[in-house]
Image (cartoon, rainbow, N blue to C red; front, top):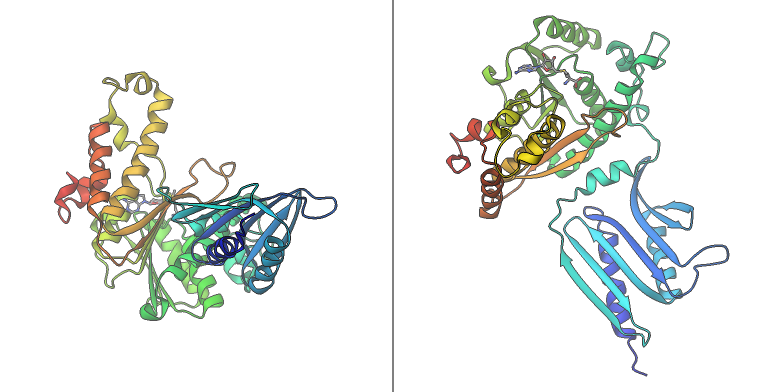
Length: 402
Ligand SMILES: C[S@@+](CC[C@H](N)C(=O)[O-])C[C@H]1O[C@@H](n2cnc3c(N)ncnc32)[C@H](O)[C@@H]1O
């Protein structure tokens, strides 16, 4: 019988390299030819989870899971894959897959494929979290009382629990997004919350990132309700923050001219095309990251009409509405790719909490958008015979969009 040990060692090295690349690893499944121990089966699942103080590799066998730090995880994985005969493995990273199969004769067959799915390792990791809320990682008592999530005793108000969870999920995403940016080059960080409302999220982001990362966040909030902006200004006063570190401006997003260039533009649940205005604002000012959770969307629906090849879907009001939501977000993410961003569409909070749980997370890439991104955008546009608001909005700087 031929000795395939060398092939096995090469495959094991490649598998380990993919699994311990913290920036891109998503998950892995191993099937072995024997059970992994008494009372367990022959399957092992691995993924990265967020735990206090960073990431851990979670090993799941049958219904038992254990989280291990990098060094221990490497040791354990080596013990398992060198100790029990492997049957197959599938490793997924952000941009590629590796399939490994070991034949009965011990031959190692490897197949590698590039993933054309936009998998966001940051979001999948945030979903795999332990119940450790970012708002508990620092002294957030004053923040929670001032922004109205907690009562004067410091307890989260029952009516604000959903918002409390939403803020925590958002903090995980902005925290991980900061890892994607070259932090040292952009200190202090200019954070713009456009369509800020009561600014629960951006006040929390400033307090959390400053407390846990030692960075300085300069916050600018923009909203069109003068009354709400006044209440945000009162809150900045309660924190003892002056205009140089947190300012709030009553303005329509489209009319707003920033005094400083934004590093991060965030906009959560700003109505209809206000999300497009927020994205256009980010792109036009070369923001390094854009985080938008869209709200209600009406603009594209009217363009879709009720006739044509897809009339069986479009004639049904509910389906047309949902389809328009999906297409609007698909267009937005694709336009951001055309504009040179790495854009991901993720669920940032569980769907039970709110139906508006989609977030478009975009990080400016080092290269301009590719011809493929433009071609994919044009295919989508031509398929649905419509021109999204954001395309019109950005056509001045990117005429290919219309
Ligand atoms: C649903 S609230 C969300 C507030 C906040 N972002 C949050 O998630 O808690 C939407 C806010 O966006 C503001 N808004 C909507 N369209 C806007 C526009 N075009 N310009 C400025 N503010 C806008 C509204 O006044 C409102 O306060």
